[in-house]
Amino acid sequence: MLAQYGIVPWSAQPEQTKASKMTGEWKAQAPFLSEKFGEDLLHFLGPLVEHLHEVTKVDKRPLKTLVQAVEAIVAFREAGHGLLLSELGGYLYQLQGGGGGTKRLEALIHHRKWEAQQIEDFLLCRAECQLQEWERQGEDGLLIWDGTILEKPESLKGEGLCPVRSSRAGRLTHMKKGYYRPPGAPICVPGLHGIGLLLAGRKKQQGPPHLAALRWWTSRGALASHEKDENCCA
Image 1: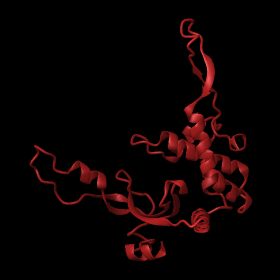
Image 2: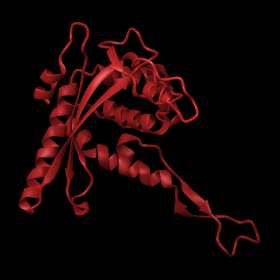
Image 3: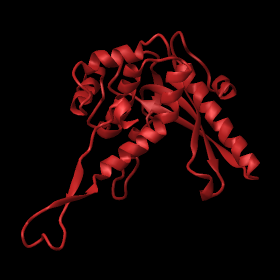
Image 4: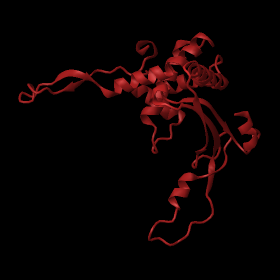
């Protein structure tokens, strides 16, 4: 799968042995830690990639871009990176994904053989299969409900943006010891509301949690909705 989807190729990490410390010689023995992370990423994305390829008949080239795009997001996402489409396309080039990263991302996003609903169905199906496996083993799990928001304070024209209460602004304006100016009213910024469902086992032996559902909704515009309605749909 590493060769098929073009995850970043790694070389061995030079490690200095006791015999080579005096001579300054280095020998490649241990692999880079990033290689293990890359393999874990492929194992994580593998079921989804296989589902899109075998069930929805998505070509291998868009799927290769999908794997590289997720890798770029994990590798470069931080507070100083907005990950615009052109910026993310440039990161694909850094990850040896070849030129034309922005055009390949556009082709992936607008590919006619897949939709966001298919990913939602895949996550729910995988969670149901995991729950059935636990039931056969005499185990059960917890379905954790998580309400969240996505803050986009610098955006104004993004599709579906609505006012959300900024948790970051709340932390910054929280009264600190030695400072006596009380905080003002809650600060709202453009963003989206989100609902997530996480399936987790009661025991460590049951493995890591699984994301069962993730839904984003807005309270403004043509797609406006209400929290109670979204809770019922989730």
